[in-house]
Length: 255
Image (tube, rainbow, N blue to C red; front, side, top):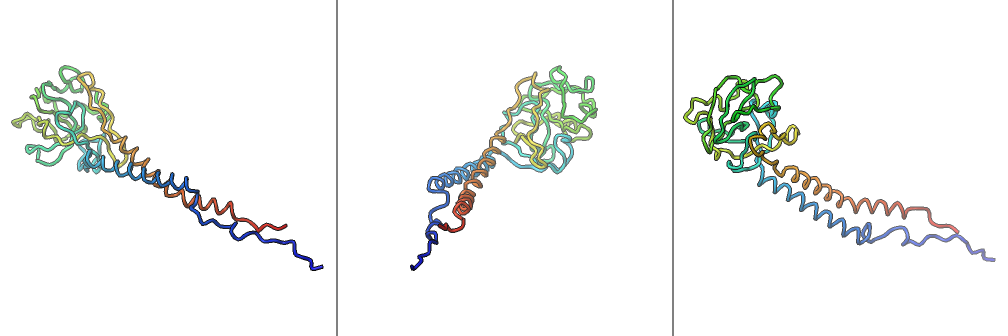
């Protein structure tokens, strides 16, 4: 009675798999996710590079909207596209020929005056300016009435006390106004600290159309979704391999 043993070991091939983790379909989908993610991610950064200009604001003349040291993104725009209420970047030799950031309060053909009940008036209409600090008047001086020539802009800082804006240049040949074509960008957002998109200046809405926000939100979504697809696609293989190895690992069968 030889007593053949009833114990059998599991086949060696049952414990490991040499094929791609997650199967062929999963590998294809993960590769597609990585490729699509890279396209979205790089396209988002490329779109931002050609659409926006970064600036660091050196002074407090635009507080509380933009503080000293803040980093902003300004959409490249033509001066003809500037509207009342826009915060713009411009350069004017009379003002020092360095990039400056101010808010447009009047455009060519407007009549701007200060002050009525502590507020600006543009074409006889009092302007609500919620972006000013609480209790601050529309200007730190009564500058009377300024008729803005066609093709030019009248600009003020949101910090009206001591801001070197149009009120500081009233005696210049241009009467404190700046040419539209001096504008190189319209500030869309404060990105450091991450204060987000600038609010629409609805106080000017009754005088005409406001500028539409730039594509920064769409660009941000493209970059975030692209990064998520790249990370998710790249992680698929290791995750599938780990889950597969757990499912295959176990004691050898005994019977």
